[in-house]
Amino acid sequence: MVIKITPKQSKRINALIRKLCCNYVDGNCLLLDNGEEHSCVQCISRYGIYCNYFKNAVLPADRELFAEIMQPSHQKRCKICKSYFVPKAKNQRYCPDCATVQKRKKTAERQRRKRAVQSQAGFRVQP
Image (tube, rainbow, N blue to C red; front, side):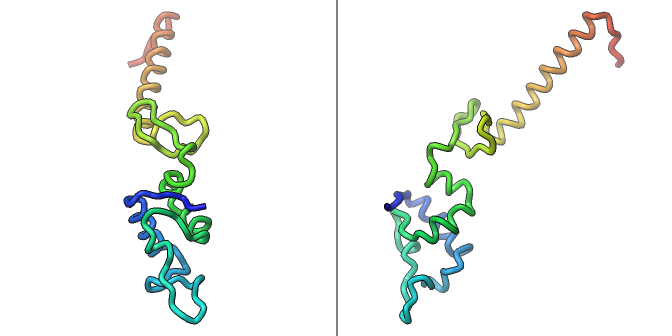
């Protein structure tokens, strides 16, 4: 089964092959080598993933690209900025950028409630 990719993804894939694939040597594939030089099938293809070695061994090294191509259903949408991200936990709601902002807001609100309860109960708040 051929997995469809976009030209933008193809550029990222080719860079990943040149950087990480141990079977890629000077534009040729060692897996296809039978005495003659053969061009890397994956480097010359623009619209699909044809190399099983690349799909199983090299592509998982780039987590974002892997998720974009192989697991579109595992991506989540940020509740704040509506961008897609790869969650590190199953209950993650926000992308990493929005998560830090949201964490600060929640902490501030929690501290505000805590101080309000302390002042109502007669505790003296130290400056």
